[in-house]
Every structure is written in structure tokens, then in C-alpha cells.
Length: 327
Image (cartoon, rainbow, N blue to C red):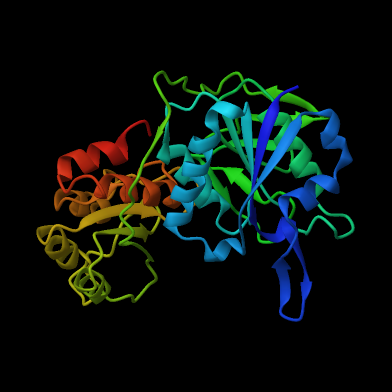
């Protein structure tokens, strides 16, 4: 039998009612005890890493999770991380980028309803996750509602519906039907060589702003003066920003921010098809000033890539190449 380490971090899946609403209370061992079917699937040990609502997760928690995996890597065949759904896509993107030369499965999962509630989605998600962790495919995956999403591409799109997540600008890596994994043969999951390692440092001074009609470009000056190193602009349509001659013209503010060494990424508010800064003047002019296109990457993936590369260098060319690699 495979040996799997379950890393418990809290979230709705482990929550119970309180006077202030649902709060994480179940331990990882509690969760396993409530699912006897797991005993016939694999040997499981638990690491109680944290017990928080995932809205409270911070970048140092990602490094802590990655370090815990590294510390236990040789002793286990795979890893299952129970996690709140609200920021699980960020954690999936973080682990997919932080952990290098991974040759085992790391699975994130959670639930829209607590495990102890009637008609919960937690039981299926957990069993599916352990099934995937016992498989042979290496990588960071988010398993939810019968689908296996690659960590780089996933986004939460429902606040309550059991579907929960979708793969953005990519197909899911696979699906699970009747306890059988059906991998998508069109998806190429990279095989890495060399010793496993992890990123040790992240730059946290990253900000995301979502454009709305009438938003003043002054916001870029405020963020620059506040010490942010990079700003992701979720623009309209293909990723454009206002560029007329009114007070809403973002181009001068973008130009000034870039001159001060700030990395500007232009992406889109749309879920699908990504940013195309070479299509309309609202994108072309921003790119000429030095704005980098987010292309097909999710905001979650862009954020993590920026945190990693900005902790290593301020060279704009290196940063641009890293952001745009393997899109």
C-alpha cells in the first residue's frame, strides 16, 4: 500500500458551527476517522500544520507547507493537503511554482460544506484526493468535484456550488469516475529531473487592482509610494487600460511607475482567453511603455511568479522572461 502524508490546514472541510459561524475545529486525524474507506486505500499519517480559515493564509504559510513536504518527502509516496477553498487556487499555484523537481503527487482539496454536515461534498473530495495521491502522476493538483486540476491553471469560480473550481485556459488533467482516474492524454504533465528543492523567499509587496470605469490613475502613484514592487492591472477585455486624454488616462501613470522600477503586468478581468496587448491601442500603447502581458496566466499564477522572481532579481528582462515562460 502507498504511504500518504495528509497535511491539515483547516478550512470549511474541517469546520464546525460556532457563535460566530463556521470555524475550523476538526483535526486531520478526526477527518480520517470519519472516513473508514481510506483505511483500505493507503497508509495515512497526519501532520497538523495549522487550523485556519484560508482567507487568513499568507505567503509564509505557503513556504511552511512546502518545507513540510520537503522534510517528509523521502518517507511518503504522495501528499494530500486539506485546505479552505477561498485561497486554495493561490496555494495550488504557489506550491506548483515553489517546489522544484517534483516527482510525486501533491493534492490539494477542500469542501464547500463541512465534512460533518449532511449532503457534504467533503467525503467525495477527500477520497478522490487520496486516490489521486496514490497514483503515478507527479505534480501539484487540486482535486474537487471529480476533476483533477493542474495547480498552475485553477481558479475558484463558485462561492457555494459544489463545482467550486475550473481550469482556466486549459483542460483539467483528468477526472475521477467511480473511484477510477481517467487522465486526459492530451495534457502533458512535465517530468522533472534532479533533487527536489523549494524556493525559500517570496516578495510580498505585490498588488492587484481591478479597473472600473472612472478609476483614477492616481492609484498607481499611491501604490508605488506605498512600497509595492509590482502591480497587476486587471484591465478590460484583452487587458487594455484607458488611454484617452481625460483624467482617466492610465498611460502616464504606468510610464512613471515603470521609470521608478515598478513591474506593471496587464491582464484581463475575463476568465478565459487571456490578455492580448497587441490587439488594440489600449494594450499596444501600454506594452510600448514596458507593461508586461499576463497572456493566458491566471491572476493567481501571475501573483506567485512575481513573488518568486522579485525575491531574486530586479532585472526587468529576466522578470519578463520568467513571467512569460511556459504560458
